Length: 331
Image (cartoon, rainbow, N blue to C red):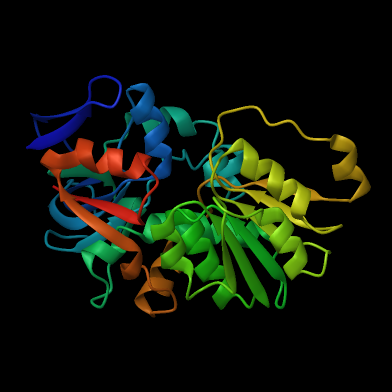
């Protein structure tokens, strides 16, 4: 089989490698499509060996001898979380906080390959009306769903979303169906602005306007009830904290890697709640897949590029540029 392996900064090499060997409780999946996640980009740019490709869907081509309830030919997607299921956090259903998460994640196989393997207890059967392409977006939809649930957003709340990459795009769609009274967003990419224009009440081009000032104006100087920071940038993190209303909530969804200065007293005096959001919890992947199947959320419109495995470097560079929506690799 063929697999894309990172061999330095911004350098994937597609190599012939042995097929994965199954444990008793695993299945072998022929990967049909695998999405590029924003979390992949940081390690790609820095050349860090890691597990790449966790947003995949495909069909089962082999089952381990201890697997029950699954057969070859089943159309599936799989949860990417390598949680142990036994630690304090896993028992609470907070799988993304598993104390063994990093180890299990690094040891699992990725989806930028002809085949990948996964534990059978992470599988989800695809409804007939869900395509492989749509199913590849179940994982990021679950991530966005988790963030929306953590925010405590209520019916009739005013919401702001800073950063309209794939996760930000999914967040605006989920808060819309969850009953937000108004949704405002800010983004620098014209293509991503266009993807959200029919969903949000107003999208601000952050290249030419002061997003924080405009959103304050739109909310009568009060600020949004909930702000989702989905860019993982220092400037948008500071903006999110500054623009939230008194007593409001800020969700840090983007993966920021640089220190952010903030005035702690302002957070205290305004009684802000600042939360982080990490992957998804028990049951949320299934809920995301159901929302896609029931056409409650349109993920197909967010797929702006589908590229072959041999073009994976070009695909990653396109993703790094911040243009367009979700990019899928078709092994």
